[in-house]
Amino acid sequence: MTDLRSIPPVNSLLASEKAIELTKEFGKEQVLDAIRQTLDEIREQKNPGNISESFIFKKVEQKLDRLFLPTLKPVINATGVILHTNLGRAPLSHNAIQAIHETGGRFSTLEFDLESGKRGSRSIHVEDQLKRLLGVESALVVNNNAAAVLLCLSALARRRKVVISRTQLVEIGGGFRVPDVMRQSGAVLHEIGTTNRVHIEDYLEALQEKPALVLRAHHSNYQIIGFHSEPPLREIVNAAHSNNIPVMDDLGSGAILDTSRYGLGHEPMVQESLDTGVDVVCFSGDKLLGGPQAGIIVGRKIYLDKIKKHALARAVRADKLCLAALFATITDYLRGDAEKSIPVWQMLLKSEKELKDTVSNWKNILGIGEIIPGKSTVGGGSLPGETVPTWLLAIRITKPDRYLAALREGDHPVIARIENDSIVFDPRTLMNFQEQELLSKIRTVFIENENSKGKE
Image (tube, rainbow, N blue to C red; front, side, top):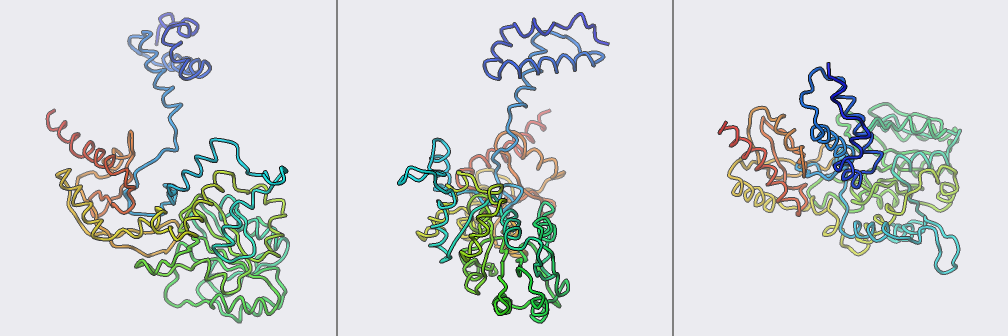
């Protein structure tokens, strides 16, 4: 066991020049905790070796560096998944980032009316933009789409029946299940149809019981193929309205532009849902809209007023940074600049020639890899099963998992994927300013490391 007499006392270490230097950078309490933890670890070792002051402070510094190393850090997405949920979904536009910078670094008119000099409402900051963009009577922004659905059901259907097709009782990432959210809201599920088919007659029969609401949940992250049918949304709306029952549409992905124009399948658009006469539509801000995480609720004022007044609205409200970024994002759409300003659409619009030229340039610079055709995906619960042609840099190597782990280490972590025993890099999801960082990381992991091994 360690000779405890050889371990310097805490007070002595804390008074040393090195401790004073570290205290200026990390704070006294953090340095003290790191010293105590290090000494405890040394005491538990059988043969710790030379217990010098420099040895101790080397361990202390390592602990402090890890303590202050952020776990939320930027990465290079070379997977080809545009709306990668695990990587933060939609990256923000330059205008949205600038809006966050300007709003977050100073006081703002979040809930202050400059004209009257009195308290204002945070809901106004994006509402007018959404009303202009979508032609709706009213709008509200909350912190995500799950919260939007929960709030709407709580405000409009608590302790009352909500009609929903069994084909739409979906579960999305993170264990979010539509039936569970409906129960948490206090709404009573009235399931109709079967897991693969529902008919308008099923809706008409359920409407005879005078439910509070009809809910349509979009199949955002899966497809039903084969023997399957659902009535068109307009038909559902007409049936519900003929019985004076409102309809709510949980769209999820929130497409404002027509995805079929870009070689993809057609993702239901917010405007199309509203055109059918749906009373309330909910969708995400950080999917195909390309903005910050948010739940956006739009529709008829008579229902939005109830939603805004519900007690839960305060608990799930959006903060100033979300509202600033969303305002900038919606403004890009209003100006007709979304395709050239919002990263999600920039990525979707990259041509095959541009992508092939990019990976050809990578291969020339690096001197390794193979250029192969591939497929990018939208991801993020949008356009399930849809892919976009791309070109990949493929590096065939044994034990690819070990190299994927090395790519994720250190500065500028790179997230890539394995395809046919090769590690592949898709340029579609790369931000322009990250190219040199990516090439440097590939060079370090695949070239310099292999060269150093060869010399051993």
